[in-house]
Length: 116
Image (cartoon, rainbow, N blue to C red):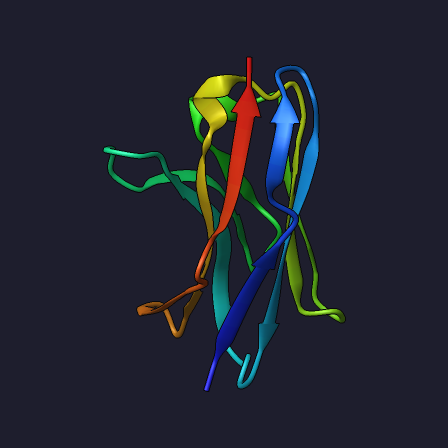
């Protein structure tokens, strides 16, 4: 059983920083991609950033230059460093992994609130 547990969310003022972390437990073989998505109230879930097994990264245009995704294979974590946060970044952030190319697992999310 694969489990993803996010942490690091909270309340921060505009311009501030937060670091989200996702720990993956269980059978973790054949993980292709790891990533972060977010869902703001009343909106659809959207991609924030992903990192492949080869280390290639992809970012939403809205977070490029502000957010950095990283992973630690030994610790089984994928982190999201967020800087220069603005109120539009307010959302629940979800960790996601893909195994064997098509098996998708989600965490329960961590709430990030950015005050103006």
